[in-house]
Length: 234
Ligand code: C5P
Image 1 (spheres, rainbow, N blue to C red):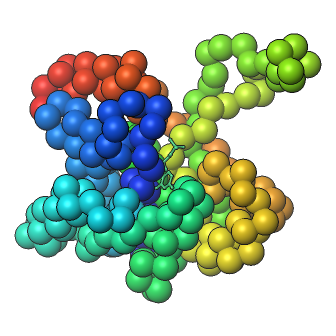
Image 2 (tube, helix red, strand yellow; image 1 turned 135 degrees about the vertical axis):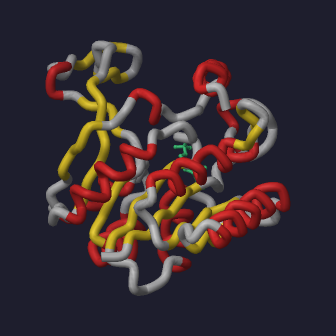
């Protein structure tokens, strides 16, 4: 079945504090979006890729146009762009409507997870190919996590059962489309697409994520990403 990838890159990047959309922030001299699109292309999983961008962003539009040209020359996926929305859910929905309708598997990926290894895309896509309607990459959590209310600890969940969730998250396209048509509107606090599946009672399978799939959110994360790229030597 044909795989499409939605790369959501329409966030404002406020926590990074650069005053520009996060996907446009440079890391090792290239935008985070370029790194993310490189990883998608290198994974070889997709026939179509949609980058969801902040409206009226000529820099990121040019990044997508360049990636699309390179993919065309190298028999890679069809890469296009679409305007994002005010929330991540709205941006994913915009990406879904821009994907070709014959795509049967959809991977949703945060551009901010710019250094995600191509193998993670392949693991997620293979698990959906294998019949799982929803698949997420996860890693164990290093910290003890507390539930806190009004400045006081309420409880401590057993750490051995906790996982941090990454992207790309993979779905049967029909399941993701109906989730976005239905429960998304009623659940404004949705932070990832698997939450929509959980709300619908669809089982969500986990596969191994990778520490390099961390989300560039703060200046410290950006420093780590710069160091990783310097070590990689590209
Ligand atoms: O804000 P957060 O870090 O959770 O965003 C995760 C991803 O979702 C980022 O890649 C960001 O660009 C994207 N996003 C989006 N549209 C929004 C908000 C976030 O595409 N309105």
